[in-house]
Length: 238
Image (cartoon, rainbow, N blue to C red; front, side, top):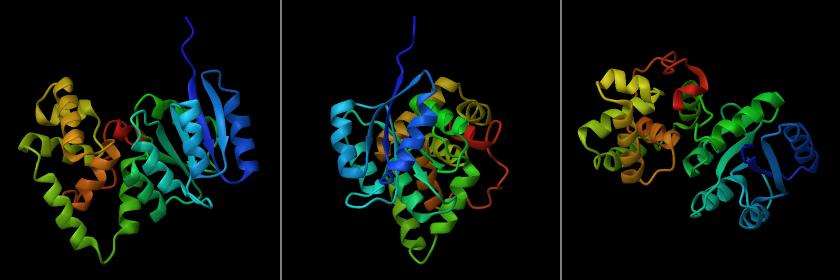
């Protein structure tokens, strides 16, 4: 039995970029490009019509930008996953997109196979963002508002129980569920349940947002760059 293809919407104001993406992704038999949009407003309309599983979203666009569009799309009951397209590794706009609910980002010059893999992983529920890159982004955005942000983050985390808080910090460190289970002497199923409760209590969309909040609260101070969870790299946020 053939699996249902992943439905993908491409959003970029440059028609050449869209054409290139459609060409490189169109060769993947398990991904179907269901539409192309030139800005965030057009993307919202196409999401209603085509119901994609994943949206590959440019950040900088006229009219409705990618951050605003991501926030609106993630607020929908049938919200698609969003992967942000960017030209910079450390860009405050990327961080804003993560806070808006994007599940990760890929650079526009990323090799085609890696972009296809990112779409597959996000469709399967795995954020495509390494812990090291997340910390790089958060440090890039750190500034004079850090103290106020820390206070707000700690107030939000206060609703968590002790074990939920421990799991949230472990997610912030980029650890996978199996590693968290081992460190906290829990079953993987229990860790998954805790993560789900943390997301629900905090009103968050994904593990990347948990990591951002834990970082804002100052609970990752002293973490080494090499602590990337199981296998390091992007797999750390599974």
